[in-house]
Amino acid sequence: MSQAQPPLALLAEMSHRCPLRCPYCSNPLELDRGSRELDTATWRRVLSEAAALGVLQVHFSGGEPLVRRDLAELVRHASEVGLYSNLITSAVLLDRARLGELAAAGLEHVQISFQDTEAASADRIAGMAEAHEKKLAAAALVREAGLPLTVNAVMHRQNLEHLPEMIEMAVRLGAGRLEVAHVQYYGWALINRRALLPTKGQLDRATSVVEEARARLKGVLTIDYVVPDYYARRPKSCMGGWGRQFLNISPAGKVLPCHAAESLPGFDFPSVHEANLAEIWYRSEAFNRFRGTAWMPEPCASCERREIDWGGCRCQAFALTGDAARTDPACALSPDRDVLTAARDDAEAPPSDFVYRQIGGAPTKTTATS
Ligand code: SF4
Ligand code: FES
Image (cartoon, rainbow, N blue to C red; front, top):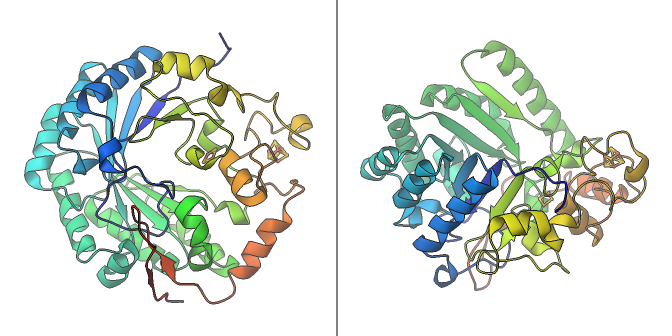
């Protein structure tokens, strides 16, 4: 048995189906079709295995988790086995009846993503008409039901100028927390990077806005903010380190160390059909490959931050260098740092059109705004 600690959190991707088509979706380019999704009995077993393994929190996510009619049953089961349950949703399918069902089943927290503060822009980014209006209505229902709300604001060059309004909207909606989440560039976001990566000037203005709002709204709204990797000097500790705190289960049942790992070649990620979660977490080659520090190349291997950021993000290292075992180029000490410099220069040029997320078929485009 390895020396790994038990995971803290499980991201349960219930489905890749989603009414929205966001061009920065964190799901893989190859989306699982509905026919491949795990059935209710298997999800119940997996949730029980997660609790037995030591997981404390389950985040029901997707795609859009509300497309699953059995969601309330699974929330109830999570609650019965002692898991804290959070719903991460686009909220466009969340009505009073559905929310009541979930709250009665023991749901403890709701996180709603917003694409922008102006309906026309938000709906264009989401690729769905009237999405913004539905989200506002759903957020009000969440607060009416007495559930804590987090607003998840995915920010990029086409909405970053509206950050002050986003903060005010979160306050108005009664959110306790706002995650100012800069787009992470893998999967769909990587092919849309020219449309999404902010300029350095935009980022500097956003950082001042957050600093001012944090001071002004102390005790009212907690604002989580991480500088986007492409402008950082040191990488984030992605997932708190590979195989250290977190596991992800895809709609078809693959068990992954992060939501983007399916895109990494040369991995045989185990399925919940083949083994139980404890075996996968402690013994699988996939979870042990980048666990700890033994796998690290220089400059990470002898760096004093190696047990702080764990060498950054494996998926980003692969996306940018073609090798998941290299130092994340988000680190200024990485020998591959020049790939980020080139992408930042690109951000000064006019944005490209969006390639919208979709299951199967050719991607569609729309006109970008600057
Ligand atoms: Fe982190 Fe590696 Fe950069 Fe050190 S060299 S700061 S461990 S990514
Ligand atoms: Fe996969 Fe960072 S997203 S390790």
